[in-house]
Image (cartoon, rainbow, N blue to C red; front, side, top):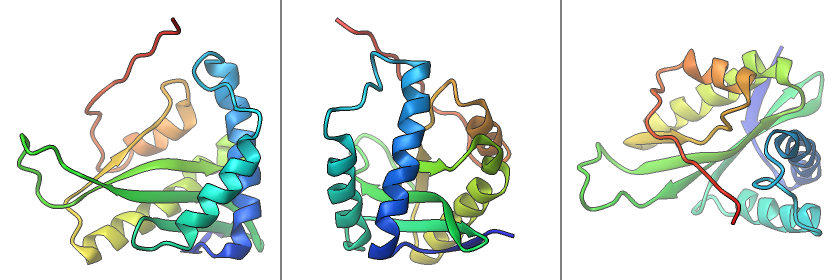
Length: 158
């Protein structure tokens, strides 16, 4: 059973562990793009701690199974370009990971569903979720939601 709740300062260490493990996978998929910086864990600890403590800047939630944090999601507000008539405030989900790929269908989906409910209650206009092209399990879960693929970013090392 997966429980979802707001993240607290006590969760930051677990969140850093999860994102560090996810970065190892990301680096295998595209090392030139996702190569972690030397102090990535320390910077992540400070940044995630800041976001967890700043509800005006982000909404951070965690998924627990058997009392352990197995995933987290952070949604942050982004300005809508003035050339688009968005249905309301836009929020981006970029920091979103689970402990292992098999958990996307359970913990990942529970996190996604929780942020959608939260966003609707707060009057958000849209959610934008960033997901690596190579993360088949995450993309499969996202494709089973009301999300629609909208854009694809390409990168090249120069």
